[in-house]
Amino acid sequence: MNEAVIHGFSRAMLAVPGLRWLFGWGYTQVRKRSAIGPLFSALEAVFGRTKHWVVFDVGANDAGSGIAYARAFPSTEVHLFEAHPAVAEIARRRVIRAGLAHRAHVHEVAASNAVGRATFHVSSEPARSDWRSEVSDSSSLLRPTGHRDYFKQVAFTSTIEVPTIRLDGGISAGRWPAPDFIHLDVQGAELMVLDGLGAHLAMVRCIWLEVENVELYADQPLAHELAEYLTSAGFECSWSHSGKIHGDQLWIRRAGPFNVSPAPLP
Image (tube, rainbow, N blue to C red; front, top):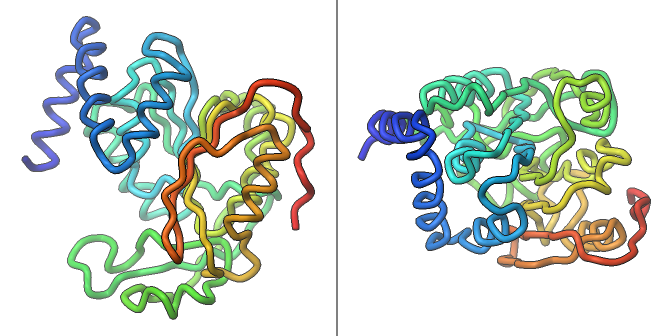
C-alpha cells in the first residue's frame, strides 16, 4: 500500500470523531506488535487514550514518528523540531497530507542549550534514490567522527548554518506548551536538548531516545553518561534495545523524590 493511500485512509478515519478513537486504538495495537511495541504500550499505560498530552519530536526528520504518535493517540498535540530546511519542508508536507496539521506542528529550528546560530553537519547517502541522497538521517550539530568509520554509506560533505533555540524559551514565550513525552533523535546532541528544557524537564513523564555506545560525533555523551543524567533527573530505564554501536531506550519518570537539578553536563 503506497503512502498516498495510507494518508488518505487515515485522514478519513481521523476526521470522524467516533472513528478517530477506533482508528487510534487499532493503530496502537499494530504498533505494539512492531519492534518498538514497548514504547506504544508504555505510552498507552502512562497517558491513556483520552487525556490531552503533548509530544515533542526533536530531530523529527521526515515526521514519520510524529505522525505515528498523532495517529495512535488522537488526544495528542505534537510539536516536531527539525533543523534542516529541506527536511523540515518534507515533514511539513507529510503532516499536511496526513490531515494532522491542526495538531502536529513543524518548527524549523535546532533544539539546543543556547540561542543563536550553529553549524549543522549535513549527512547524505549518495547511493539512495530518494531525498536521503542529498540530506539524510545522520545530520548533527556535532562534528562527525567515528560515524565515518562505522557507516561507510553515509557521507558528510557540507555544512549549513541553522538557528538554535532553548526549548524552555519557546515554552515561556508561548510558542509551544511544555512536553509530557519527548522523542529524541538528535545524533549526539541529547544533553544539549535536555539541558535546554531547564526546569520543564521535571514535568516530562517519558523520554524515548537513541543512544550510542561508541563515539560517532565529537564530544557526544555515550549511553552510560545519558543514563547517569536521566537517573539523577528522576527517570528509570523501562526498556533498552542496544547493539554494539547504538540502540534505543525508553525512560519513564519514577515515583518518589528525585533531584530536579540533574547531574551537570559533562
